[in-house]
Length: 287
Image (cartoon, rainbow, N blue to C red; front, top):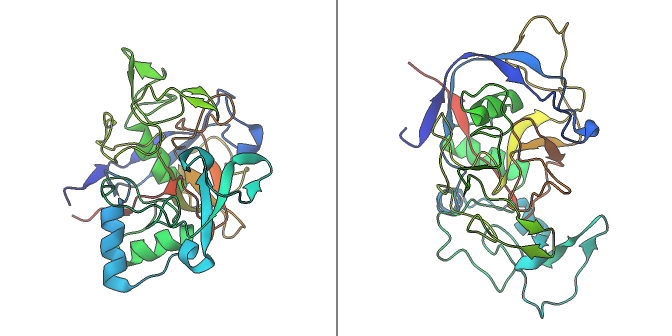
């Protein structure tokens, strides 16, 4: 599959010892983890790919079934009606009718957005797509190894610095969040899935743009074992309340959410869909 890349087998330093994130996220301590070889999508699933899935199956997403989803206020018209927000994050607005097909509500559509990552998809929706495509979601360990692109211990998929020779390598917020985005990276909202330079494994947008679902249940105590030997193909807890998300989004900013680093993590409930969460798929490597 030319749209998938091979991530080779082997061990890598999983997690982060820099203490840059929220301790409750459980980024560290780093541990040696072995992951078998696998294939992973070079790009996040796009609106165009998701539309083919919907056309073939008639699937109804969680956001469509519930009737609303959360949209970033900065993408709504100035005269948009007052709606419920999130107390701890008032930049999120409840928008009735918002879904993958109408990302900002009924006044919007995905015309000319074929190459943008599909959003407003829950973990449940991502699993349904994977089943149709004959693939699966990556484990958290697989996702992190893929994001690192073969670089050991680096902060981002391209290295330690936010930019390289003054060039941005991902789509995140620049300026003062949430009031002013200078868009120095070229984008205010989502970027196409093939924007920016790919990492060492040929993968695009493993940092920023849209969060990506992983298969694991979330726990902040994810490093089991004696600390001496490598953990082999970890799968996370057997159950939980939240599923892992990795990679950050176009709304990430170091002042409050520096979670677009390789070792950073977040989570959400499996039926939650918002305007900055998508996914990509993996599958076993066959010979």
